[in-house]
Image (cartoon, rainbow, N blue to C red; front, side):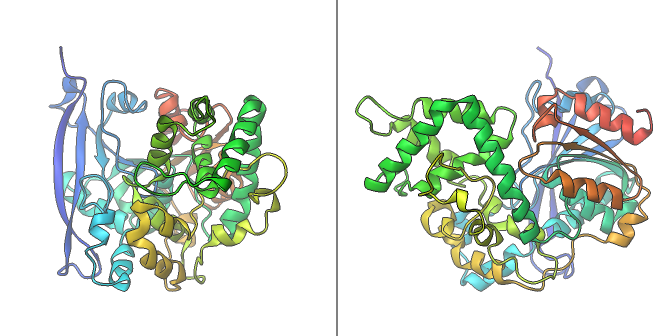
Length: 422
């Protein structure tokens, strides 16, 4: 059997702080992927920027991720493990525990935002591509990185494709979460409309947790507020079904939570593999306009329907990250005090350069999912109007993972848009 892909692993040494290149170094890993039939050809490069934050690039297998076969028809693809993820000097709970103080850990983590990822990408591009510009595919948070890339080093880019990830250029964390809670509420109610019995099941589980101490396999206590974070999955194309079938096996004949359910809840809510998702979530919106200050937690107070004791359906939460998580979840406890320091930081450098973006000439094609639970469509469309050379496709055909779920159709159309063929 012929291999589906030819792959080459690359490891690059980069500065932790690109402003002090002679200081501490870290490793950044990337995997080159090419169609075996074209491995010897000189092909344009496509850099994949994974969503997250804190997510490693996908590991390729036949037909997965869904966009890869489409990309390999014309490109050599680089799957980048962004710094701190996968095989790129990973930031884990064990690594965090080695720091002498929370302040040192917070200082270290401050170098894991989009500006540093772009600097890594430029260093890699110059080493790998003979300084030729390349194209990028940014999924979700990868789109945020793309706008930082266009702000800081547009000379390195030939064209950019963004899927569900145009950020608000000046939106604060407070702006973002004021818009997020209503979208999550609507998505949860849509889920209950599809699966009415699951509303009663979740309320039954919440009532059980209020009166009984239930422990997850790692020893963490399962609380109602941790249960509610299962709503994170609802923004994906298969999210409703994933949650429904999880709940389908949640209670045994005696009305106790099953081992299967507890194991899956631990995996879905534990952040063992991607603590940076929680640690860095609100830093995405820090741009020198004051501290992010646990914005999702503060915004929650303004939405009474999300109160756990509220009569009616139990509303789940989405991608929001809360201070309590860093005290109650094993995988996040080593980051607790550093996360508080990051939330209080006021001197975050800007990630976007609006004047430079307004004058942008690099073709940018983006899909905006009309009902996206994670990234606000209104903010995305505002950004599309503010960035030069941008063409946008708005659709409700897919959810946030449309670039993979569409089997390459989304990427193919974005490439046509950027090239002026559609």
